Length: 128
Length: 290
Image (cartoon, rainbow over all chains, first blue to last red; front, side, top):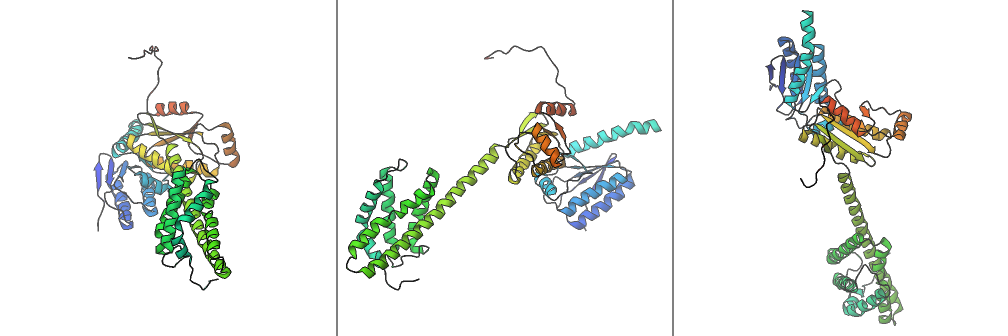
């Protein structure tokens, strides 16, 4: 079965969805990502969906779930590159993904994760 | 009720085409219309009578949907379309065709004076034919009017939803007029496309020009804000007028978005969020032509 690759980039994980998501693929991604976050002790997850043209309610909910799982595991999730049509569809479906951070493109998403981690870093340094 | 007789109308029309046309024109000239030059009117009447005579030739007189009536229907469609655009009223358009009845009936009377039964039959048939043609014309007239209205609606909705780039990364969306579902869709698409094009971080939605905000409009605004957020841009709503603020509170509408009194306040907030400030400087003297 196809799997979506998960890349490690410093303290963050990078997921680029380049194929059409179907339900099983989305569930596999959720499981893989959960394992990787724990494995690498990742503090940030960047999901690039700029190639995704079709999003249904299930995929939308999976994205929200991933964000919530990551939060429980102490990592921030940023979804980047959503297309206008996809954004409109999600809003019309009533899925405005309240717990998910968003950014326009991967570059800004990465900057956002870095800024969030920098905010946390001093407190960690103080504690040690 | 079907009258079982072979109508002689086609034969009469073919033979007396010219005199009927002359009578009809005389009648129409009695009530001239400035919007329609005499030459154009004559041409229109001429082609209608000619095509009518052609269409009736195969003995089928009242089934105007038949293929034989194709050319006549074409002419009438074109005519009602131009009249709809020129601003003729439905009555004027219909009366134009119905006025053909008088010359036609008078002609029938003089031809069939000796046969009252035939005269009655032919009159009924001719009347039915003209009525159907008139109704057909009204239908196309109505369609043409609707097309005009739809086109105007799209033009208005496109005109009234510009997205303005205020600064690098800051967009303004001044909304003017009532927000309904269709317009919200256009607004939303415009805004989201502009966010991608200008790589915007913040969008200011200014509703100074929106006359009323009810629960539906508020919901539409929130949808737009939510969609922009999914694209990674924050929204600020500005220009809520006092009456609208009251209505919103009385209706229990809550916009869980940053809102500012006017566009300049919202712009200041946006600049601060992007880490930019506006500082005073010695004013430079404006020199014309340099």
